Image 1: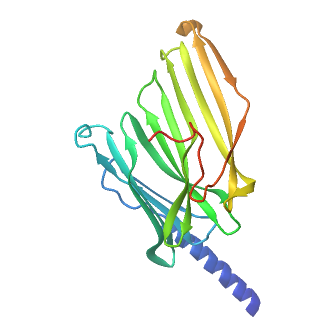
Image 2 (image 1 turned 180 degrees about the vertical axis):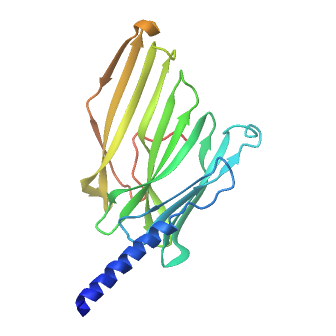
Image 3 (image 1 turned 180 degrees about the horizontal axis):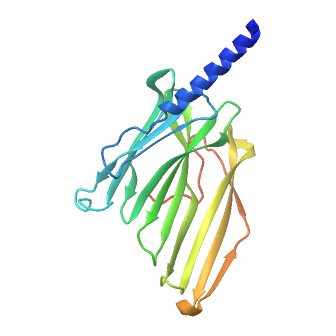
Length: 245
């Protein structure tokens, strides 16, 4: 084996070990409550960096002795394989309110949210689910964060990327509708940040008749494009685009 080939093999092994270390370190932090959430994910855009989130439940002092009534904080951090101390953090107390419309999951979204040539955001998707079958309600929101020194700064606050609701008898009669939104990075910019092109597609279902003779029709509307502009602090959401607080 030549010196050059030996060096190449060594570099490959080093890279594999580092990748393995990243995966090994991506272990959710332990949580104490059954309703707490903890998640971590390697950040593909920046090898060696890991995203971590912890959301702890605080029961409502009056109505939260049983069930899901209460609030969740949100703690985010970016950590490196090179050291235990986080490179950047974010914390928001009472970030989410939970009741019959309860927090179901917290997930990272590491799609290519390249907002400037130098800045790439990561996303946090939060899923809420309702408890009623005849009045269904599900919602997934997306927030985007950028690293700004040793802090993580939110630049998109809880855009609803999936919403589902309706009112029906649980068998046939009634109406239900869902809206799915996707994001593309626009070619134009506002205050130095790329505009975001949001495509919304709504599907509706109407049912009539008895369960054994149900007349159900589903229609899907044409995609609607909406451009989100950065105002210097965050992207401005039109009415109806922001998640329920």
